[in-house]
Length: 117
Image (tube, rainbow, N blue to C red; front, side, top):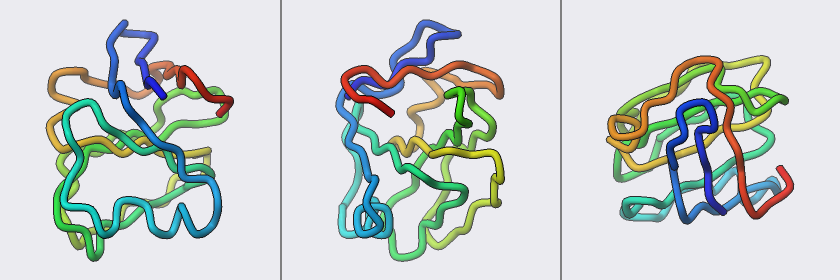
């Protein structure tokens, strides 16, 4: 799946997975050594995340039912908890630094090509 910031016309990830089942959401990126440039993971539904047990930092974008960015976290290090975002429908997890080259601001509209999200 390709994740695009429609507002800015940038690609956030060109190779993303989807975690929808309870097991997939609980596992997330645990057990991985990192994300390659262009990789990502969409977790739905999701209102908060943690990086406890992870081995690498990530950038994240929480989005609402209209696929608009409602919270952005850059360089979330291992062992951290995010805030709870009551309006969030899901979150995009990206390699740390991904949002430097493709910045996302609150209100930006996201597109998830290749999947009905």
